Length: 243
Length: 317
Image 1 (cartoon, helix red, strand yellow):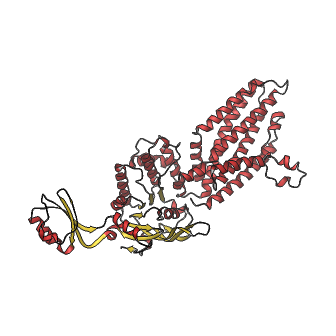
Image 2 (image 1 turned 90 degrees about the vertical axis):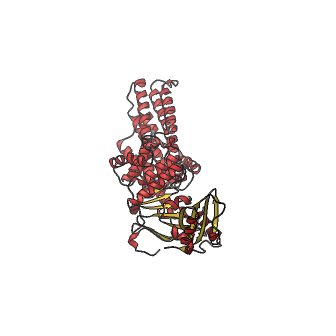
């Protein structure tokens, strides 16, 4: 496991120094801070509107950062031969893939904590209520971004960044149209359709009091299943690849 | 190739790598080599000879189509590779990492603790000429500095076997000399160095033995002196302010080259003593008397001109 952590640490050290990550984060944070200046929607719903827009913005920024960090990482390392000297050591291919994804996921976590702190910190004094449920939304976005990163890392072990980007956007689209395509759980295909809807908790967070602890647990389980399967697929694809 | 197995740090038997949908395009057709423990072994060949593919198969970066690969007496596996350091050709490391972080990454990948790596990093960077550069990001390194950092990462875990692919690439003459000295030091400390290089002078200067690849086959192998030696002739270098060498030896001379007052020529081994006496009696200064051998460049040119890749395969022991 120490080799996985070593790769992850190097990925974090490299990723947090990428200017693009912080430009996206800063831009989104400025916008989040400006949300309270939007026109009022009427008494009683300002807080809900704030939460909805803040989470939507966090979601978009998280996906952009996830794509930026994961789409080209492994292809670039292959092209530049950066990973030769690592894989020529006592490092298994799966350890490299897992460590790379883990490093990206940890970096995303740091970015999400920054986002959560700002939208929480802005919302509390402006709307005079501590919006603790925002953190549930931030957690869901982080987990979904982790799945997207796992998808990108998996595809990037066998393809080029342009293909990975298109595939990731298609994956995002396909995994969010289950309801539109199949209606509801009464459709027999419902349970077999690949979906990331489990992470979409903006409505209960923005307009309700959040989700239950049991739901959060099930969300983490869905994340582990998705990310685990994708990282395993990536490791299998990478193991067979000539560098 | 025959020898006691326990003295071989690296053994490759019948390595082959074919690309293409039907495996019809061989990058490596049939390569076997043996690197003696504690030696510096050169792997030579023109572009496309299969050097880098052979090294990649040895290090697990490319899956071989056929062949057996052993290092340090064991079939190659991640466990064995823990005792190996590798410098790829034209290395390019994550530019936002510092030199120290690069060594930390590779040290930890080799199972070292953070303290162990940090304790060794400064000395190692100084040894490769990067003293005081621990905290500098690799993005600010020149090509030569990256090459030195690459050598440092290859050595961080004190490997028993070091595989260097074009280590002098991008280095100035002083840097190339430093790398040669470093290789000699490593070998004297007991490490085995497998050096792939286009720089024939570098190989001639440091390698004990070489394997020459051509179009995926082993074209020649053995000690450089044995491969390049021209049996029966000796090369003599003399200095003197005369228009011509003594008439008594002119009929014996071949390959005569003159530059200013310096003359270089070869004569049969059997005439060396007499020729030296004659030159001495006539006031010539004798600067060197060495067995005549081809240059590695000439040897290469001959090999490439051969009709088949392994034609005239020479094994010198």
